[in-house]
Amino acid sequence: SDRNLRKSIYSFVLSLFRAYLEKTQSRLVCNMEDFNKANAAFIREDYFGALELYNQSLKEQNDNFDAFAFRSQTQYKVNNFTGGIADAEQAIALASDNYRGHYLRGIGHFYAEKFDTAVQDLTEALTKAKEGSEKALVQ
Image (tube, rainbow, N blue to C red; front, side):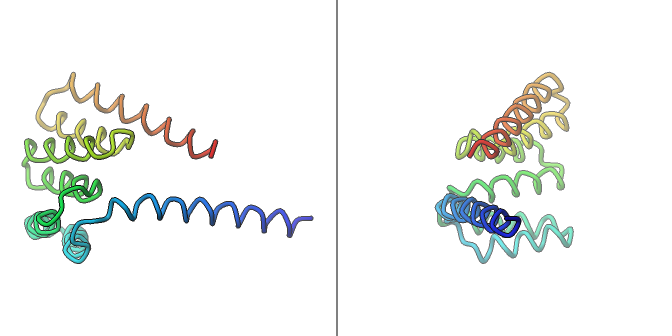
């Protein structure tokens, strides 16, 4: 029946969400209070404040993909392309299968006018994004 189908879909989506949370919780080991404050500062367009808070969040433990990815974006906002590329590379080192690191590195290379490298990175990001969406459909 229609109700049973909806119930099955709901259970399936819930199990995917739980698996995602378990997977990401292991990566969220930086200082989350500073990380959340940094995100809020970024939204307020206080990019220098956000950088300081991302730095603080990574000081204790520096293995958070999201913190490096967000700090990379913030570096670009303050025209620090070298720092943004370095943070994108850290994000890639932590999760090479995640397209965002490759995308952010490509954006940095574009800003730095390294267009050939930017195209390579952005192509890799697109490939990773496609692979990721295909894996999500299969699982």
